[in-house]
Structure formats: structure tokens, C-alpha cells
Length: 370
Ligand code: GN1
Ligand code: MG
Image (cartoon, rainbow, N blue to C red; front, side):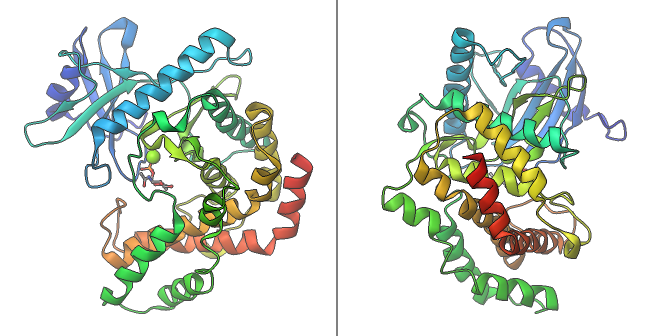
């Protein structure tokens, strides 16, 4: 908890909607999300001292009711499965949707803001991987998530974010935004322009494989980055994966690529010196092994053959998303300064270049893990 953050008394009445027992004593900003606003609520109810309150960004999630439905379907499925078969003998927690005083899974403010609350899971979140064990545990958490949802039909989940992780759609957006950009063509902007230009024809790789029936949709997390995996402070093991807003049907490759691009970048997404960013293959090996330990036999030979592309593509895609948002005037991701999304794009493109320069080594790691 960051004591510098102030108490938000104006949010007490919102938090009270979800606090069916006990009195609210504290509400503060929480975490580093780029889309929604997240708060930690403290109440005097001993059995639920803390919970998480969030305002869903309606510019991004046009149907937040469906986001809640997906979240409930997935988490209830996981909870049922754990109660039947256990969670590999370890502590494993699933975020639980909290009900309002009126028995709903969200509350809409007088100004149209969409609020929801979820249980607080005891554990620590890191923005950057600390060591090989941490890497293995982050991989394990994603593998566990995929394993627990492997018998849930993807058709039971709604598509709450059309085009999410579909790189050709991000490219179309980029092409539409680019001619309207009237800002400076700095060296950094030119680097990004060239970077995208040189890779645009390959960016269809996963969607082509899906269209050809080589890869099939499954329930995915959608955002399994390092700080969405909670770690037990004593055992240093992963205890759960949070942020279930993007749970929907998709390719597990989006998740695997996203987890690896996030975890194997020791400088982190917000690195100051983008030129020092690199992809760490030792972390990659460990994370993949962790993933496969938990995910079981769920990946086919064909699935394995697209893992390298997925790692490269999702890094590139996130760079493209940040860069497009910079060109568009920062309308999607929250920023702390006007050039923030450009800086983030450079980090992801540099990471992509590092992945490309180590293609052989990464392919060998994937081959050995398989
Ligand atoms: C966004 O809001 P947050 O931090 O959970 C984004 C992800 C990106 C991530 C990069 C719905 O997630 O796709 O990978 O930023 N979520 C959405 O940090 O676009
Ligand atoms: Mg998220």
C-alpha cells in the first residue's frame, strides 16, 4: 500500500453500495492500470476488511454488463473445478465478484459511471520479474488459468472487446490515424514508422493460422502481464491471476505472447532508457516451463509451432497500439505526459527487435520445452 496516496472521501458512498456489512473507513487509489480506475477499500467488517472497487472505462468497454457476466462465468467455473479437483495442492485464489446492496454485480452512478467491486486477494504484485523462480511462477499462473478453463466452451463467453489482440485490425486503425497526425516527425517517430512499415505484412500470422483452422479459439485471460499475477510474500509462489476484464474467447497464443513479452523484459514496460530494453531468454525458458507444468497436455504440435510468432507479434502489437494512440492524441491508454505512449511504443518495438535477433535461441527453448 502506498501511504502517499490520499483518502478519497468522495468515493465512500460508492464503496458503501458494495459493503453490505460494515462501515467504510478508507478508499485509496490502487495499482497501475492503464484503462480502468482502481481503488482499495477498507471497511471495519472483520471478515472482509479489504476489497477492490473499480470504475470501468466505458470508452474501452462498451458493454460492461457483459464484462461482468464473462468474469462471473469464468471465475465460477474455476472455483467449481478447484473445489472438485483441487489446485495442485497449493493455495490458489480466484477474484470474486461482490454484490451490491440491491443484489446486482455493478452499480451505475448518477453520471453514468459503471462501478463494480471484487474481493481482495492477499499477495504482492510486481511490475517486473525479480528472478528465475518468479518467472516460472508467472508462467505457472497462466498455465493454471488455461488449464482450469480448458473444459469451458469459448462460446459460453461473450466477445466484450471486438478486435482485441487481432493485429490486422490494429494495423487498419493505424493506417486510418496516420494521415491525420500533424505533430513533429522526430527521430523516434520516424523509427516507429519504419518499424511498423517493415513488419506490416507479417502481422497477419496468427489470424491467418486461425482462419486456416490451425489454431482454435479458447477461453483466454487477455491481459496476463506480470503485475496481474499475485505472489505469496512468504512462499514466493503465485497465488492467483487477477484483472479478469478481458476474459473472452481468443487464441491462447495472445496470452502466452503477452505473458512472455511482459515477463522477459527486465527493464519493464515503463523503462526510461528504451535503447537498453532486451528480451531475456533465461526468463523465457523458465516461464515457458512453468506454463507447461500447469497447463498439462493442452497445446498441440501446431500450437507449439506458433509460439515464437506469438511472442514476437504481441510485443509488436502492443508497440503498435501505443504508437497509434500517441499519433491519435492519447485517447485510449492513460498517460502521465504527452510523449508517454511514444516512449512505451519504443520500449515494445525495441523488445520486438531483441526477440527477432534471438529467434534461433528462442525456437530452441520452445522446442526443448515441448
Ligand atoms: C492495458 O489497463 P491494463 O493495464 O490492465 C491493456 C492491455 C495492455 C496493457 C499494457 C483492455 O491493460 O491490453 O497489454 O494495458 N488493456 C486493454 O500495460 O486494452
Ligand atoms: Mg487489464
